[in-house]
Image (tube, rainbow, N blue to C red; front, side):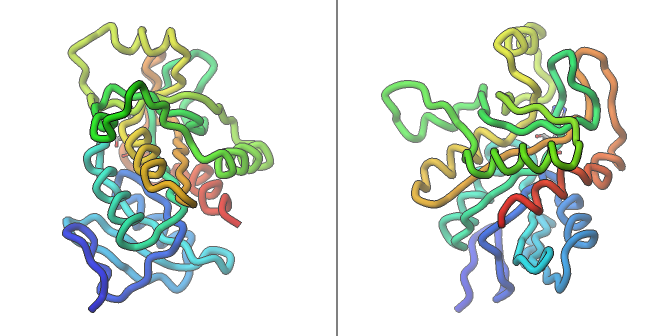
Length: 238
Ligand SMILES: O=P(O)(O)O[C@H]1O[C@H](CO)[C@@H](O)[C@H]1O
Ligand SMILES: O=c1cc[nH]c(=O)[nH]1
């Protein structure tokens, strides 16, 4: 019988060891249709579309994760533990928090701070710092520079809250050097760390809006036009 989980039912379609993970399942569809050859769809449960194909001869999958750590927590756990995925690269949008960062710049998340309680499950005797895999991070930085894509490497905030009632929260995170806010990477990094061994994770983002300047992009642009980030992610794993 083919492997399946409550949320991923590939029905014998393959899932590659390397997967790109946008929050939006329609961004997954766009990446598959734009960049992959010989594409098969491996998931449609809850419309969380997943596809596998080849990119420059390499087998690669792409799948939506939904929004927030609980959602990416489920999908990345199942991809790692049931389907043997080894390289998980989130390709998301984020809101910039610092001056000197512009809409459409790329952010590479060296670390992912969080206001989530996801880490509590591990019962650690202290505070855990969710970080990216260094080999994926170093390659992403090198590729971004080579392509001439304006990019920033550092700490992001993976927040549980999009509409935050605490109006001081952004300023406090900004004062600690947080580059941008998104909603999933800390959970992804924790799942990769918990899996141990050779499971690697990285978050790469395109800045969709700026929390200081209030510049923003449209939902259509978010779905399709973040191509520089997508191309970096597709080329990271050799
Ligand atoms: O564009 P995606 O990948 O969904 O990422 C960002 O956008 C969503 C919020 O609008 C959150 O999921 C956040 O992390
Ligand atoms: O989570 C997110 C994503 C984009 N922009 C934001 O302000 N927050």
